[in-house]
Amino acid sequence: MLFYDLREFLKSIDKLGELVTLSGADPNLEIGAITEVASFRKKCPAVLFDSIKGHKKGERVLTNFLTNRTRERLVFGVGNDLTDPEAVLYWKNKLKEFAPVEPVMTDDAPVKENVQTGGEIDITRFPWPKWHQRDGGPYICATSCVTRDPDSGYLNLGSYRFMLLGKNKIVAHIGSGHHGDVIRKKYWANGKSCPIAIALGNEPSLLVAAGTNLSWGVSEYGFAGWMRGGAVEVTRGVATDLPIPATAEVVFEGEMPPPEGGTEIEGPFGEFSGYYGGGARPAPVTMIKSVLYRKDPIILGSPPFIGASRGVLSSRGILVWNELEKLGIPDVKAVNYSWGMCIISLKQAYPGHAMRAAHGAMGGTAGYHGRFVIIVDEDIDPYNLEQVLWAIATRCDPETSLDICRRIWSYKIDPRLPKHKKEAGDYTGAVAIIDACRPYHWMNEFPATTQISEELLKETSAKWAKILGED
Ligand SMILES: Cc1cc2nc3c(=O)[nH]c(=O)nc-3n(C[C@H](O)[C@H](O)[C@H](O)COP(=O)(O)O)c2cc1C
View 1: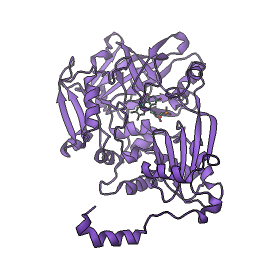
View 2 (view 1 turned 45 degrees about the vertical axis):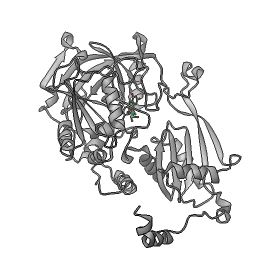
View 3 (view 1 turned 120 degrees about the vertical axis):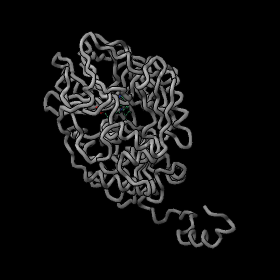
View 4 (view 1 turned 180 degrees about the vertical axis):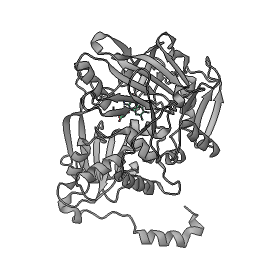
């Protein structure tokens, strides 16, 4: 097993010199600002905030835990010796062997060291950072939330942000179409509240599983167990019958009553798109019924920043790639997913191959919420955006190589979603397909590129290395 819990992961990254610990930061903007500054440092260290202003020593917040190559590789169990393309290929192929390792129930649960219910509950005692200057309030933003489908019993995990409203009241943003949203609406349709358990600090594979768009019915607990090489230990909650992560740092159990009973304003929040796209709008509340926590708990924070580094293994592109293969689309060479742009590199094998791949990516679970699908030939590295732009500029004919698909599943926090659509609850958007491949039917006549051959490149580099310098 990779890591038993978050604390074991922390010890490992500390040994590797990947962690800095900082005392006295203010949860009001300073933790967020330090995290942003650290994430743009060359080493991009993980930051553990202790003795946070207004809080006891030991009540900690951990940020930047997955945002560099070494730490990402640790959590994904992928060797640091592999190059990025090798690591992507390794993880993509490993994903195909995914077999859920289902969680095991235990009573021996560190998270039950402290249990509060009823009038004892006061979640404001935990550090709730206000991350960005225009945020509407303090947020916890790297959760793993458990809900259960009332029809099938399917246990779902998703990562959603929550804004603090009071001692036992919070408000979530759960995107429409996300499984957690589909599930809560089923309870509401029957006039019932939806039970939820919100875990705030976990061994990181659980956050990866909760934050990954796995298909409906696939167990995120099973995914995390498979990823870390050992079943996740769960324990029965005290206010719900949901199995909660036994080694979590903090778990809030609660319920989301039907919105007809009242809503509260959620947002704005600095979102992953780099905007406050969702604005401030009424959202259903979550009432907390129990709080379970370990001594000296550590809360995870993963606030989005424009341009913050992300490892290649966390890219949705890998999931899209596997979905395309499942659809039987051949010769995909690599897929990148960047800022809502899905870039697919393939070796065209037949007329329409590129467009088939584009439609496959749009229709899958992993490639949704994008605004552009770009298809490039196999000589273009989709991770190299300079090359991708070159392909668009030179191989795409705006008259014949662009298609616009309308009324596609999108999301309400899309910064480009017009106000009238937001107000009407129409969260659909358009996706442009940019076919930046050489036209298939005259591919062989397309002008050759000026790129010198691999052999000549190698030969020349070796021969003149002393004068030109090593690369
Ligand atoms: C750190 C992090 C924060 C996230 N925050 C949110 C959020 O606030 N709301 C949301 O709907 N999705 C959020 N996501 C994305 C969802 O967790 C992700 O799409 C997940 O697959 C949804 O799960 P579900 O479909 O099982 O509900 C976040 C993901 C991560 C990794």
